[in-house]
Length: 388
Image (cartoon, rainbow, N blue to C red; front, side, top):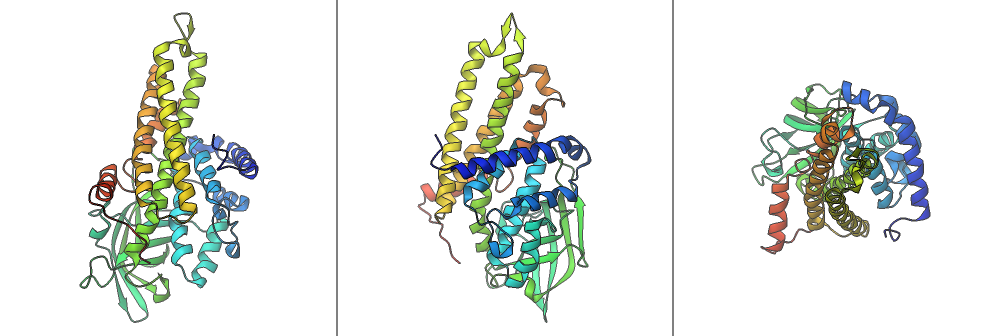
């Protein structure tokens, strides 16, 4: 059904990625979930395989492949059953590195983007704040120019890779007196004086290091402002579409994983003299869930294609994340129910999957925020356009 999106080369790539994940990642996931850290060597292995450079220019070691290679990477990462591991990878590749590539100077790309592609450096994107959340315009972190340096003060929270990354891409306010949306995108090395991080204890995504970060008179070179002064808000808004589509794709992929696992379980579990996949009530609910997942997946693929073609997919990406994460939570809830008491046991994958999935309607813009963005576009006829 989706042959228009995936070529033979895509399928070969998927097979190779599956093998890589089964060999290098899956055997270690339980341990990484337990200790809450991901060893540095796995990042290097991802880099060696080219997975961090899928969408990035060859000039910096990337492969410049189309967006459906990214779709494949996202889908297969969901099937290792660790939302935290998957998030650590895609937050590095598609949040931090997106800003390096889009707004970074040539010097920054040569040093940071190239080493991010090889896995030598890990990045994080710092937007959310303790008092800001989804309201980007309400952030309090500031950047003040002092000679040839910017001085950064403030804090960020809920930052994936916030503790163990090598560099931070930080959004901070500039010249707030003239316009509260005047912001900049800044690159800060982890070891810079005044940067500190605290690891947060989470319900799910336990393999990833989610952190709260403080900036106390952090001084960085003027050259570490990425892009133009006061344009950071618009850079962030432009990149949000990709982040929200990523979370939509993640959601349909983990829904598929949940259904596939549950079907296998149902084909082996017997009750009243037959396997439980023979009971009509369960069969029909599976049919409903599979239909819902196929619909959101088809929509997500179509949005990905639009994004690849240069369309500014604000509405579509918001719809993708809103509906896909809603469906995923319901599908995984039902699948856990089909396993009965075993679904509640940690040794079965649905327990972790249900915790990890719950972040879907929260991260990258809550469902409530997305509904308001969509409502503005549909009811108020508001148009979101690229401004930079």
